[in-house]
Length: 111
Image 1 (tube, rainbow, N blue to C red):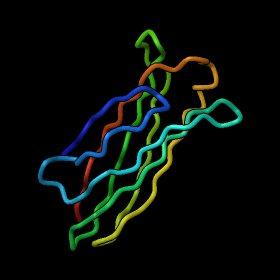
Image 2 (image 1 turned 180 degrees about the vertical axis):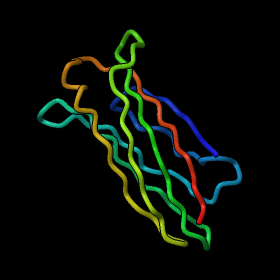
Image 3 (image 1 turned 90 degrees about the vertical axis):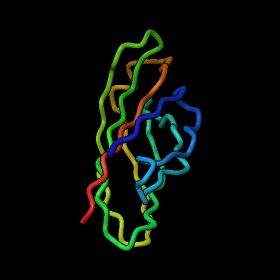
Image 4 (image 1 turned 60 degrees about the vertical axis):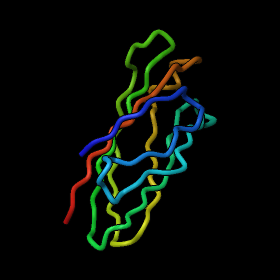
């Protein structure tokens, strides 16, 4: 029930499913750096199922040498046949002028 993906921080991550059979899709992931130097991950979770889903997501940020420097978490409830935006922020990213990559992991809980 999970999915992971990785990309250069600041580049868009390809759209993907949580699993091949999951009715929840993730779209429009963007990573931006705030004025404070934090990295913010934004995206949309889309539910095509007639049931409510709760998503727990994790984003790991790595420096250019592949060392983990932050682990962020977010949660979202998605109504039946609905969608919701999500955001998570890495405060520790301000310590790294050249972030390397990030991975995201998503867990789908059906109600």
